[in-house]
Length: 317
Image (cartoon, rainbow, N blue to C red; front, side, top):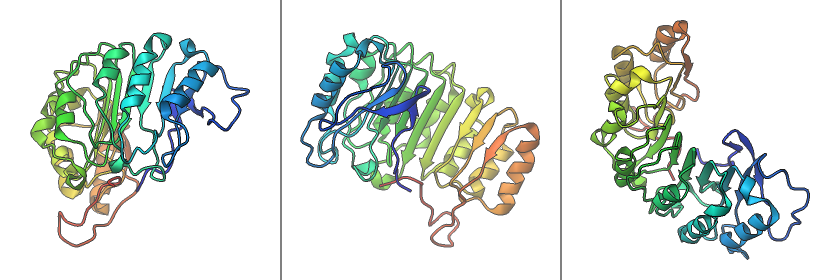
């Protein structure tokens, strides 16, 4: 699977594309009513992203903007968004109501997820202390150092391969308000090198006292993650657990069921999996009568018959 569609919403607001340079910016919606997506052509763009952003802040009232989606910048497959970040930080005083920011809403036609050159997002978090939601797509050159942010409730990092230094940076961060953490860990082929020990701060839950929704997904070590979660202290206070999009099979599913109770969950998302029909039925019988919404859609078949071989994540390249 690749990412073929742009975000449809952010911060509960419908996404709206700010018109390109060759279109009239007439009849725009109220600045606070949508999540604004600002982007330029990925290939041979005639306008740089920061120029499009300047047009945007001139056409709408930036003081009312609540959610902003950074679409493609020029040649995202070859260069990072340093100028994008500089433009955002330069405008921070004019964006006092900004509460949600997503960087890199780029489809595969614009640039494959693992080809997106990212950058150091830490200054963005420091520059926007009132953000409630932050998301980023693309793991190449991504830097997320340990930070303290009092307001963030949601952090989402989408990659085909998440570098361990990013995992460790997030794990070492002080995020007392965080309720939803969503990490696409990816595969070693595209740079994923985190091990279970690197996820331990999330599993223990002590650094994230308000965490209620945890997604550790799109991983080639999904069985190992499931086994670690079977006894992880954080699970007992979660409302939702997401192990979807990865290589989860019967071994990991059995570990989950044989570990601590999961009947308190509102949702268990396991879609895109390699679980047998018998094990899937066992999961349903164990959890659905307790009211847990279990997503076992998108069953996959391995490329070969080896117990742990031939599996693949939903998103890689």
